[in-house]
Amino acid sequence: MTEIPIRISPQAKVLPANALRFYIHFPRPGEAHFDRDQLWLLNEEEQVVRDPFLILSQELWSLDGRRLTVLMEPGRIKRGIGSDPPHDPALVVGRAYSLVITARGQTARHAFRVGDPILKAIKETDWRIVSPAVGSLDPVVVYFDRVMDAALCEDEIRVLTPSTGIIQTRVSLAPDGTAAQLIPSLPWSAGEHRLVVSERLEDVCGNRLGEALDHDLSTIGRPRPGMIIFTPRGANAPSSVHAKAQRYAPIVSRRFWSRTL
Image (cartoon, rainbow, N blue to C red; front, side, top):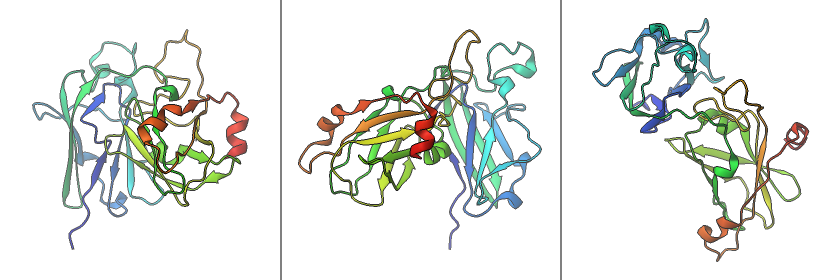
């Protein structure tokens, strides 16, 4: 039986210059098979980029040992660090790169180009939601305005019923990180629902709702939760029309998030 291949995410073809993290997904617990010397960032000439990653005393593995978090070196991302070679950007706008890992006898590679950095906080008002039909098991589809952090999308987005009960959903992020499906365990009921987002949610650059990671010190901002109200449509209503009725309601109280979730 052929083993499931190692996978790198996000799979976006264009990533911002200040992308903070990648994930490497192993078919089975991979810590015993991972060697940092077998992880490379290559430029378009297939040359190894020098020291692009943050080196930690202990690698960041998920609890099941199947997902490794790889962080880019912050000193080569943040503005104003300096112009010395150690602080040159690891990812240069307009250039092409490949992230490559060899483990378990496999080689995984993801090629991408580098776009402009994303230096603004996340705003849920920039997202678009396509509502499901009442009585169906169709997913709520959320289209983001940027590449999001896959692991945090799975953990930090929830749906509440009209009576503020939590709907058990499975979050499936698109390979490029720009859309997510929230798949319910039970059919959707009628009435307004709330898609609630934790203040811990981040995009691939580490920006959160209300706060950009790399912000001007004079800019006031702090992470906050968020909420979008949507209503499952009637069985005969077209999703594209119904999606226009969605409403956005930012949450300013951290107590709301902790109380409802």
